[in-house]
Length: 67
Image (cartoon, rainbow, N blue to C red; front, side, top):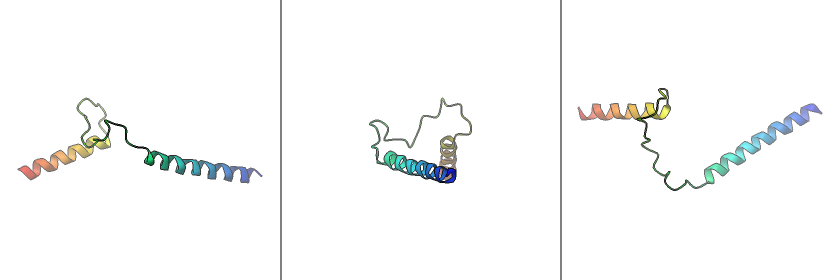
């Protein structure tokens, strides 16, 4: 009986995750948050941020293309 309850609980949590993921993707972007390509990273102190690393790589590539 415990196995059945555990399996139902896991299936229920997985289904909840799928539902919330789809609901999140269907939610419209709030006004003012449409442009997320260039975040303001100058004041951020997080050194291992994935967004910051991508921006730095893009800037390096642009500098190499120019020179």
